[in-house]
Amino acid sequence: MSTTVTAPWIAAQATQLLAQRGHAWLLAGPSGLGQYSLALALVRAWLCNAPTQNGACGTCGSCHAIDVHTHADLCVLMPETVMLALGWPLGEKAQAEVDDKKRKPSKEIRVDAMRDAVEFSQRTSARGGAKAILVFPAERMNNITANALLKTLEEPPGDVKFVLATEAAHQLLPTIRSRCLGHSMLWPTVGESTSWLQGQGVAPDQARVMLRAAGGRPEDALQYCQGRSAGDSFAATWVRLPKAMSQGDGSVLKDWTPAQVVDALHKLCHDMLALKVGASARFFDASDLPAGGSLSSLTAWSHALAATHRTVEHPFNAGLMLEALVAQAQNALNSD
Image (cartoon, rainbow, N blue to C red; front, side, top):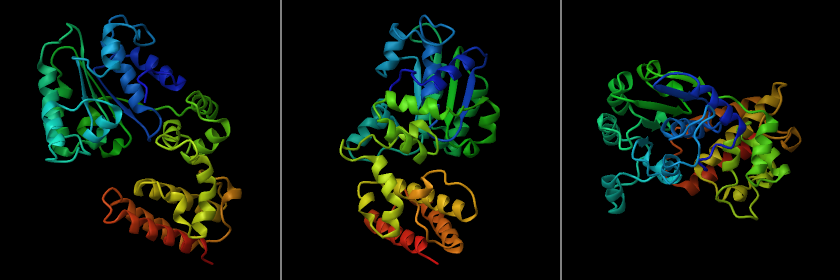
């Protein structure tokens, strides 16, 4: 993901928040609306050598240091898996432990990293200006990690600013939420999202399908085509998915992770249930959905998917899970 703010809904929100005072922001909303992009835009402006009312200049030494992920006055707190995915360097000790196979990269924000951040906040600024701490996704702090942040968040030493970005604000401690100025992420219009996706190289017809598949969340939509070969069109797969599931054909999901499969089936189940009660489909075109499926079977399928979701990141056997999920979908979609 680029560090440059290009999406118009992100740029507008950055301008709005920079005009307000406060040492800690909590950016909250569902995934795919740009919490990380907005958080980084705020950090860039706070640390910029020549900021404007619209944000960072983009050309100074501070902006360049953030672009290459080496700014001495910026502390980034993320799960190690997220840091690696976004290109942020791990701490020296953490990197050595991962390299030596002593442990796998953490999926939570580690308490050791939080203690390092607290120590960072107490140091003198390396560039003689402000310092910033960016936490994303903030819901990946467990209670111990969050409590280690509380006092510093309430009474930061010196000129330290915080931005916490989350896709699940309800999972944060109330004491964390109460110490931040809250901002609910804005939903872009369909036109804004489609234009932005096309600017990222997505074909117009694919952008429409991907945006619908993502429930209108543009960054989630863009993720669908990343890591796929040029001949592997997510949009085409998505259109075929309902029919394939009703036929028990799991080949369309062969390169998907268990989490992606469960998410897609949840959306298919949602739309099938919506049609059964006279509502509109949200994630698929109604014409692509099968005609079968009883209300009771679809409801039971929804409950089963919810149970699977709780352990989807730790499947006992991903292949067997996929087979079971496809069989489960086929049964529900063909019930009378």
